Length: 524
Image 1: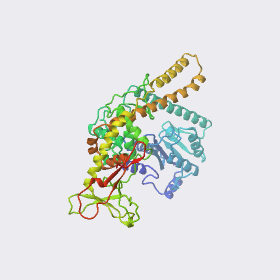
Image 2: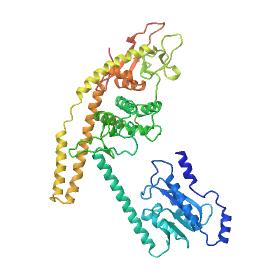
Image 3: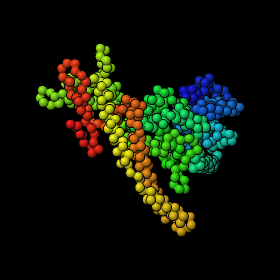
Image 4: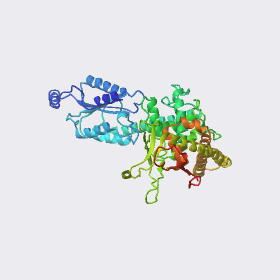
């Protein structure tokens, strides 16, 4: 990428070894027939090889043609990887060319006697650009213009109309190609064929066979996100594993999110966020191998969308110990109130057998410094209690997710749309009636599909929760385990042990559980 940018930079501005402005003016006095010309090169798409060879080839050809005419190239304008037909695309060098043509000279002061381009559609594809270019070009007399059709007189009567006709034909051809591309894309999607321009992450170069190591990483990420992991956490894991995108770049937050939300993972095809469906309204299944089940894909998409733009299940702060800020000091102060400060984890002293402990902060930091708990035994006990609750919650959740139950409503809506289309095809209703009634039906069908997907995601999440909780727990990261603990309880009150070296007492750890109704229950 850096090499491409360096090349594009070299293809802009004054060519190397060009004489100074004063020397060029002396050459013009000695040879009044010499022309100082500028060259414009553009290519719409440079995304495959990314080496700017298109604009480089154009400038090479233009330079050779200029030498054959005895013209001197004094400036080069280059817009690489930029469309001339899209209104949203700003072509910086084209805009600079228009400014310089009006001024009559390049930014360095070289006079402009003409313009060269590989073809006129490199310069303009929209009527507005053509008109601006023509006005700027003809603002000075006697200029020459050359493209692959030869030297042309832009001052000739009727040339403005001729140019507009050419622009209109070019624009029409561009739109025709776009329509063909869209239709081809959709038709291939309906046939279940892969339409990816690049090798999708998780698949081999044939875009069909799984690249197992990458596929396993995706499958694990899907399960982790459903279970509460953040996109940022998955991104860090993929960085550590050395995974790269199909274009050879490091994964970023957004690219990981795109991978996980792509319907291709479960074998489905989608266009602009909508699943491609067959005549029976069933999602089209692609020819490639799926990585996850449709239920798992619906569930991971629902989990990501539920979090909004952050992709985080909670705060982004990473803690080193399992119960940091979850434990709260239960020490009773002199005024009879409880300390209730959040307890922190820290590395234990070298002379003890355990590695870490939890402590209440000092008074100056908002605590009372009155409670300390052994870390390994505290983690073990709270984990045991949480796993017991997670098992019970999982079993209850599986029973609480009902079947969708709106299949008949969806089938009726689809039937009404089919009947409407049939009446229109048979000439029983006119275009106005058809297009007035169609949007309402399409909206209803879309809402039903979204509600159905939500139900499928809920069922998938419930089934995921009923898996072997203890086995899943061991495979999760510390951050994921903390999220599960925070889903199960509000806090754990840690009572002080008192003076002296006393044995660990689980009765001094009082969990405050989260109830289905949202209220906390303090076990007796």
